[in-house]
Image 1 (tube, rainbow, N blue to C red):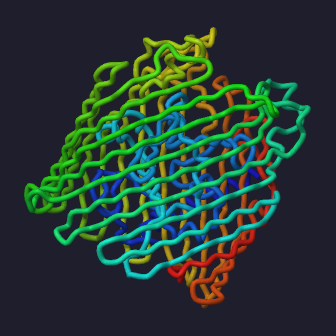
Image 2: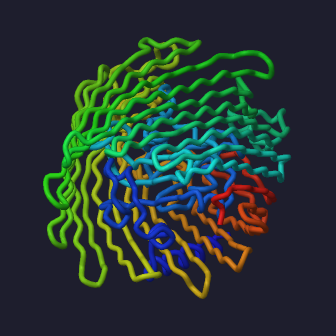
Image 3: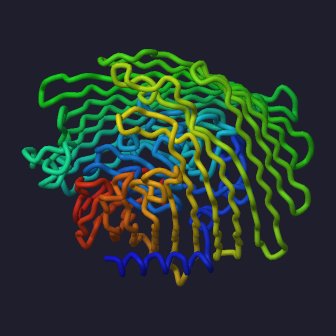
Length: 616
């Protein structure tokens, strides 16, 4: 296994030295909005960016967001026992609550835990994903220490036709998944309505013997743990002749998951986001955007059929953004964000509401071969007061297409309601926000079908929130994270090769008993290679994912071994708009864990029938 991982990492690094970012090769000139809150191309971004399109999703045939994103530069997940089980993201080695996640511009994540429920977001309803690595608090406020991930739901075309679409998937673990949608529009309007559902009997989330080691799992529940999800999506918009635009979106995901727990073993969940935005140009050089949104999370917990408790949270948010063109290639962006949070639970909190107002300013300019980006923000929170962040980035383009970039930025993570008050007032209401400082150097080059990029960075986090010996949250810890990422994209003999390799050193730096230890559940090395080829109406492909050893605890006593998995896939476009897809995941039936004593699926097979008029 170690040799396989080493080979995958070496191949990824070798290709990264001669090739480049997947998205530059697969989507040259792709436009992103998350990196700067304005529309720029990936090549113009002074940060490390990845883009996943709908075509990529159908090509890779993932069952979940973790399936889709695992192995991208700096991206790793920890999953507690299979599809639908709790899934935590670690971006560039930061904590799982240190990544801001947006759906159609609306911030998501439970207010109690601060975590986005990746396992509850239906991948079949996604049109596009933008992953921006590095600090972004100077534009978005709290929680963007590791970066920002924005998910865009599927939208309608504007060619005047009504377009139905559907897909049906069946496979291992009695999986059955379906999606049906209607979309359309014209030169002014667009809309999309879709409904989806998924059910799987799952696997036994905890391996036998877990109960003798820790209380998180029962050994007397050696059964499969099923997962069920139902989801609905609606979005649309209208654009007037003068360029004014109104758009809105809504997503609701209902889940039920069984698991092996000490005090509860079943949860019913609600994840809902809604948002709307209106933009127009008061002057030719001035664009203004008004937006509002809401995110609701609810978890009802059970032990067998007995209700145990619940937690419900709501976040309302609003924004006013102004983009002013000062001159050619000179853009000034300034705005105000507001959000109000409310939480309810059967256990009770000492406080149940808070609000935050953030004001930000950003300048983007190009001077010959030089590109500059400067940003600053102040957040005022009703609980922890004022907090200032800033960032500066510079890029230089050489004659031969080589681009050098450097950046520095600060960020922070706000204490969650659980940190402050949960349970029964045992939290610490005096907690301060976690603070970070990050520096990064990047070098990349575009050579037609060959592209390459390498980024090196260091992040220091102070006031890291951790539990002391009495399980009381305090601002005592520090962390230092160093990393190098290589990305590639190249066409070789009709094969599209897309690869990534990451080296990470996430260390505890608090000077205490765990000083120098590896931060838990963050592999030091990851690599991923995607190989795809199309021949007529057929397409074939493979993905190899590898991850090095990691640890499940702060003291590094519980090691999780390195592993590699191989997925094979094929598709057949047998008629206009019709596609048959097949995928075998974990072909060699590797056994591995990303959370101590929690199983992962073995070899699995899936078959999908898809209809979409836009399919090519």
